[in-house]
Image (cartoon, rainbow, N blue to C red; front, side):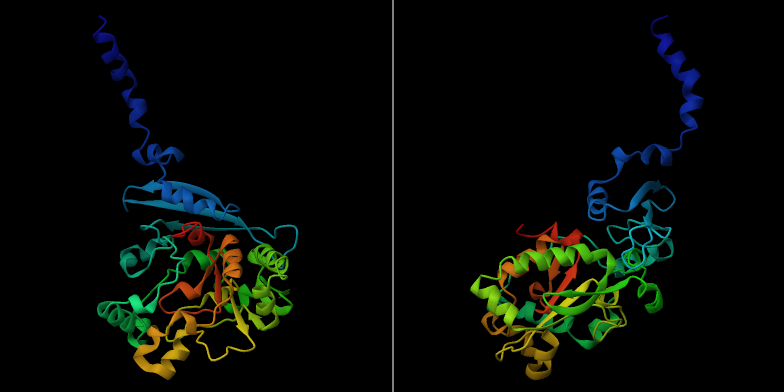
Length: 308
């Protein structure tokens, strides 16, 4: 009888277990992959619901967030969207079949300068191709679906309800309301160190801090993150004959633009770069296609830096 009793219990309660679908069972938070939980932490004001879609064999993430306008203290409603994880790309259902053409959103942020002298001939050729007009036009790059929803960037008219005028380091600029506190924290921390000779010289040589500008990335049909108001270009008054942007150097040097030595590139002080990164901004000077004036708000990347 002792052996029969457990079997009897299973027989009696099996119909109840059978009613719980595998999708419902796997939707338990304990099963959600760590990389998805990690991404959620970087945008904590979003409410997430995760379920596993057995038919599409992928995690579906439903998101809801407050909808604000011009930094008012009370939300103007809610906005919602659904994305599939798609290996870290956050794609709508209709784009899943094309997921391989997109980059992942969360990866190790390389915040270390690479000396061009160390490039191999093979690397130089790859960089040359990557920076070509044809490559830039044919590459999908970062999938923008999540960011379009997060920053209400479906059109210029819509997003401009969320763009605010402010000042940064004494220069007028326009940014997205979502990053206002982060921008002001960067400003406060830089100004607190203005007694440093390097930062003092940096501030004295500052010409402009341009952020929001509805436009496409050069030589592509993709929106620039300036179109979201989350990228800031810090331009100096004088470059002192130093390089600052890869495309400008390409116009002058042709295919040798990537070999411009580090000492001949204009850069914000290391301390300034560190402050930006600690507030969630990546720096374009670490890119092979270098953009040394450029900072861009991506907390999902700076938290995954190569050297934190």
